[in-house]
Length: 455
Image (cartoon, rainbow, N blue to C red; front, side):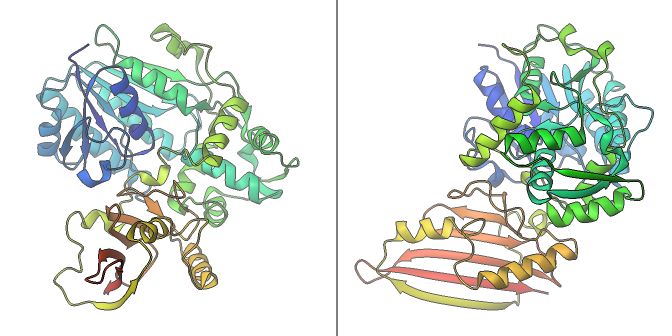
């Protein structure tokens, strides 16, 4: 068993959360860098990794996290922070490179985006710039460039799924006919994992993609077939700008407008693998080859339908969320608040009550006045909030840090306590807290619901 120590940044994000498991399966020692250790709870690898708590924009925190590390994975991005994400991503990469150099890291592995077209979106240009910063660090750097990642819970997959399911007829930008080169998340993880198993540090830029190249319009039709839907009617118009497209994508899909805009802008480019950057020169394809588009869609749909989604795009840090300011006690602890407190006693067992509490939201709904929750979700969507469209990762189980409709799970103690923090648009901050405990009366459970609001 190798003694390599691997650091994974973005470990509670979509790719990082799955990569940690793959690295552990190879017998590697893994350390994760997270802002809040609570967000690792509920992952299959919790308790099997070292945890470094810190901010990826702090060189001091990074040096601490990178101390003694042989290989580090750079899986950070800032697509959801607004107009200045390019500057933020460049600064983060510069800080990371300096810290890695100081701590004598032997290998950096970075997951970027395919960037071979002369027409480039801000998103892809920023991804390429991050790669340059890491390549220039003086540390051997492998940059894997992927196009659209197809997998249950990925942002690209969720956008594709919701657009295809909900819009049998749609008007789209003319560049929906540009080619794209999707890859299954399973295959992304294969290449990422094997970078850590190479005998010697190495540098290079390698494109990774599946066996199929097709337009986004063709991809939507393929998804419709896989879902048993009729052929979609797609009308391409030249006046639909990325900003306008992101608005209607924000209404139809779970993605916020800021993220949707960057994904839409990426369609302006032809995102196709360059044969001169063939990854097989470095790492052999997975046994049986990379998954076709249809196989990747089928597998992702199977995972969604069977509630086996391990990580989701919304697991990643949302810089606009009050979650980022609340990592221990809630902000309302010990300060004046407006609170609504309800308490009841029930002869139903604590275990059964907890099952209902943990299953709240998503397809289950909110157990009362669901139409009012739906109206609130629609209003939130219209003003650019999360709305109710994000739903749940799992219909029965929750873990700290994940999204739940327009809430985020701030704290959870299974069987007795759940605290949600609001991510809907509000003139302040709000929470929803459920607490269960035995009553003094035999066979009776106390149920307490607290809804604090701080302006």
